Amino acid sequence: GAVVSQHPSRVICKSGTSVKIECRSLDFQATTMFWYRQFPKQSLMLMATSNEGSKATYEQGVEKDKFLINHASLTLSTLTVTSAHPEDSSFYICSAPRADTGELFFGEGSRLTVL
Amino acid sequence: QKEVEQDPGPLSVPEGAIVSLNCTYSNSAFQYFMWYRQYSRKGPELLMYTYSSGNKEDGRFTAQVDKSSKYISLFIRDSQPSDSATYLCAMSKTGTASKLTFGTGTRLQVTL
Image (cartoon, rainbow over the protein chains, first blue to last red):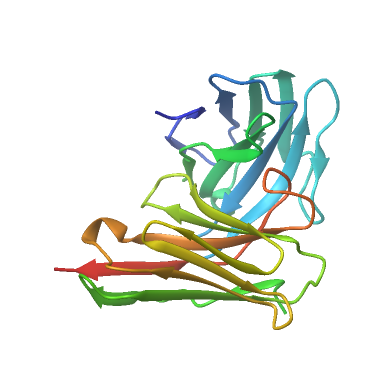
């Protein structure tokens, strides 16, 4: 079964609203989690690294105020797309590294459609 | 130039064929090389990883890394319809559970 759970799997929202996506590690703790964005027929692009108890580290070109990341506990990270616009429509995927196995586990992804 | 280049396909092969998937990269600092499989609308799952140059085999899958050419490959023997998915190569400087740089993915279709 999945060891990283992502919710919601699909969300449709109106332009201008905010959407929150949750990423949970189910049976292990993760001090960091990674958020990716994937456009059709393109690779996963790392957006940011969330750090439990501290600020997220954003990749170059990613708007911090647009994509708010909070790593509230050792098993939960959230990505909030603020004032969403149609160009924010994409597939967002989180991942969490498991320290004891050295493996990176991915969530199922969240497809955001902004009308 | 992208750091990691991968032919997006699609690649269609008959059941039982040997499949060869490849990526090239430009950053010589990459040390860890991974192959992920992604089914439609799902997150990627790790198939195999290799550290530095060399070959690694796991069942029907073989991963090869040639650091001198900055070229990596994944071979699938006796391909099955259930192998139909998108295969993404990914690379890292520091480990398999750290920041990864992905290729675009190659969509594979294995037909009956």
